[in-house]
Amino acid sequence: MMLLLLFFLLFPVGVFPAERCDGNDKTALLKFKYSFSNPNPLPTWDPNFDCCDWYGVECDETTNFVTRLTIISDYLSGTIPPVIANLTHLQILRFHKIPFLVGEIPPAIGKLSQLDSLEISWCNISASIPNSLADLKKLRFLELSFNRLSGSIPPSLATMPNIIHIDLSRNQLTGTIPESFGHFHDRGTPLGLFLSHNKLWGEIPASFANINFSGIDISRNNFSGDGSMFFGTNKVTSTLVISRNNFEFDFSKVRFMDSLVTLDISHNKINGSIPTQITDAILLQRLNVTYNRLCGEIPTGWKLKYRREGFDNSSFFHNRCLCGVPLNPCKL
Image (cartoon, rainbow, N blue to C red; front, side):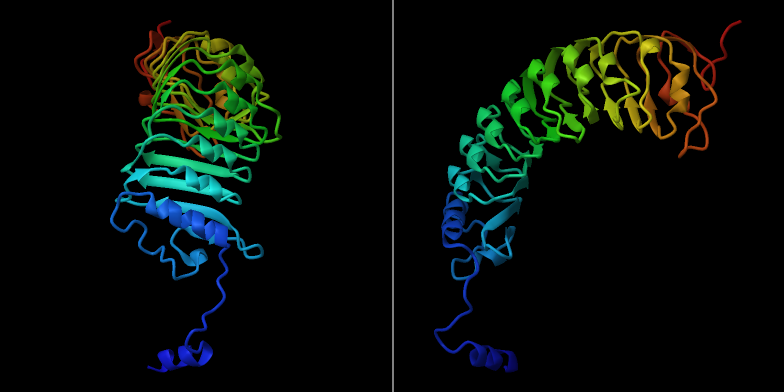
């Protein structure tokens, strides 16, 4: 009762606090809400209240424009409406774990010129990746994993001048990695590229040797040929996963980066021996070279910083003729 009395003293009948939310943004959000087929989608989005206080909506404290929209929902049903492009000041757009979100990525999203991060993950989005995403010149993070996207990877994605993270994993993408991906603009920050669990094939562009990846995972595809361009002492890669493909190259010729934490080359056709230089990778915590055609003695004298010992047999088994600890002794 006291709280109710205080409310009426502060805000007499007919007088309510001024709404922060920009009117055009509120209109766009309401059109977004009513585009879905649910009887009452996003129930907290009440038009009688300030949209800056709605679930998943964040506004800039100075301009009051909507700058962030995050939707996580088990029941929201329908497609992403093109009206999303009317939120012209959005910097972060995130649709995550919405199993009944279907249809395509609307090309209109390419009009969100202020977007820094775009995530549509763990949904059921299908069709191809629109070329219009390349119009997002300020975009740094692109996350489209765990969907049903098909078709090829648009070469135009490599033209985004500020991109530092691309995750298209766990989709149904086909074709080869565009040659343009070996010519990303130097943005001062290494690129993270994640394409695992797709239906991609072919050889990796040789120009990838010029890219400094922070992390790369292209596992569980059908890539072939040389994969040695991912290695190099001048690189800063921490995660390198190329497992379950058809790569064939001489492993004894690669050189390891000091930053390497995870290395998985398993289930390929890689030959040669394991270079002794691998023992200098002091940050290495996960190693898997199994199911290849490697030979020779496993290097000893690991200088690992975060492991008391080397790696057990699960890191090395099922190769042509690898030997030595932790496998069988080498024959004299």
